[in-house]
Length: 202
Image (spheres, helix red, strand yellow):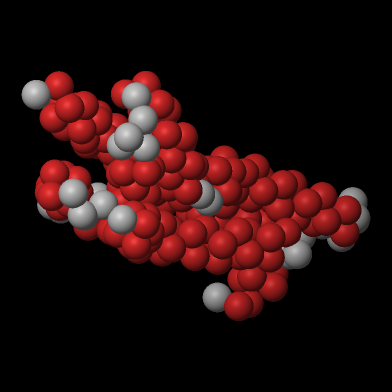
């Protein structure tokens, strides 16, 4: 394997670095974007119970904010429970935008690697082909050696595709996951707003 990497030339090292970065991002996002961590089950019911029991305090809100991304959104709502409905919704929307940005962290980098890896592989192959043909002379060209050199140069393209395919799959998976989380958080936040202002009307 190491012999192939050496023979493929310096461009393949760019692909190796990209593969390590992509793998690290996939592992990090897989650990962070877990449903139980982003949207803890029962958290909304607990917040509603705390609000109705009148036990809302700065300590409770700060603890909720540190709980999870959903907790940050609901904490923003708790901070403005004494404000009009529209002000409360604006506070929640601002927190939601910040949380959504955090959930999307590193996804742009992963998507960029998925898009660039095939091009980097192609670039490595072109560089290899230029070096191979540049080293051949009309009198001393060896077809077998030339064919071997071309096959080695194509390792760059193959490796680029090998990186791009799983990176693109995980990128799209994480994007769909984030979109699902954001929609779920919005629904829970709207329910909390309705509970707060519905209680006031009764």
